[in-house]
Length: 267
Image (cartoon, rainbow, N blue to C red):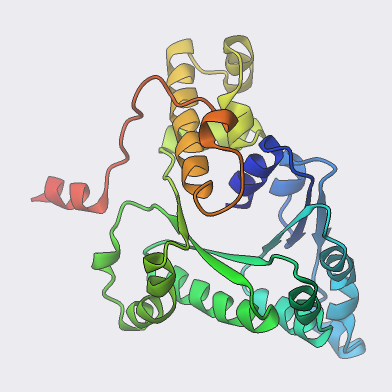
């Protein structure tokens, strides 16, 4: 999700700074020079220094307070939002941003998986408390299932109470599902989706090491993914129109099989 937002923002000519509160190397590899990684202290470090989290997050806090001239994107790893939210709240940074008129948008990604819904709702609640007045957006990551199929009672309750109102109000964008071959090629390329979609035929073959016809199919799938994602994103965030970020694919991409398709196939 962060990759798509950063791609669209940079293509729109915005100045972007990215923080990842995580240990993954994916974002620094894709956006060299734009990403600062924050590794949260261990439990032992917190025992030694009760403000260890605040020290680690100080660069992020400073960037948020001085973000008037650029877009600051923050990707927070799983199980870390509560620690980040607590530090932001204690430093009164969320209140400062609200009083200074800065625009803060919380984006919560989720799928139809019950655990993802529950985690997304918990993250949303924690960050809303840390950033009073912040806008909240739901990123629906397509996974081949439908929201009507959510049967887990806890997830259903969380969805109905926190996500559904945002979706009904239009505070939502969709992230399409990439087919397995395209996803594998994109992961192996060390390119952003937009960068991959813009590869020339010569570079495409050099990057993928696939037969030409297969490589062009993959590029077409990724181009459609970029176009659809940015078109959806542009409806809720002030980025350049999708037709300017990436051309619409000349052909229609193959559809990913849904869970319902799989069930029908088993009958």
